Image (cartoon, rainbow, N blue to C red; front, side, top):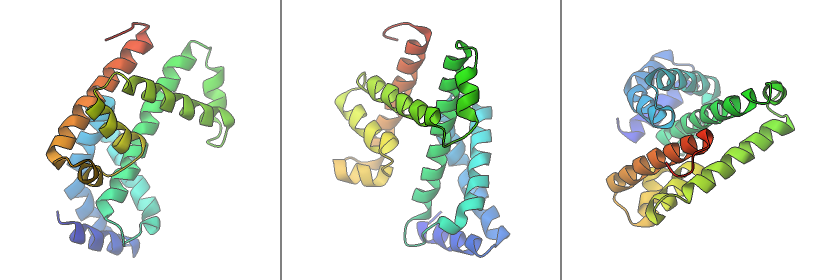
Length: 190
């Protein structure tokens, strides 16, 4: 769907137009599910995360700036939800061995210092895992996933074709997932 049409639909949603929202959901759900699957490796979680994204979008549509591309805003909302999910999964696995005390404390408030510490620790794990990537994969992964740049803008800035960037990002994410999984199990290199 054309970006200008997406923007028009999003602006209509800001005015409370549920039909426009339904059109956006129908047009963009499949790519969001695919994106979530790359983070989770599980289709059920991917569908759940996509549904949560649409709820967040509806609740926060007033904050969308129509001067910017809607798809960039939508993908940022979705990516943040996926990263939160991955982080929660990581925290759950680690805190289970510590009798769940930290998890209960961290889950009690999003402003809790432990939640911020866990977020920073997860980012550090991602950066360490990124060291296992090729230079090109690392640059794309850091610019798109860690710094939140749009794939189109990053491809342009790096002088890459958008399709090449998506392929590089796909393999970078797969490698990151394998490295994190291996480190979680206590193995070294996957």
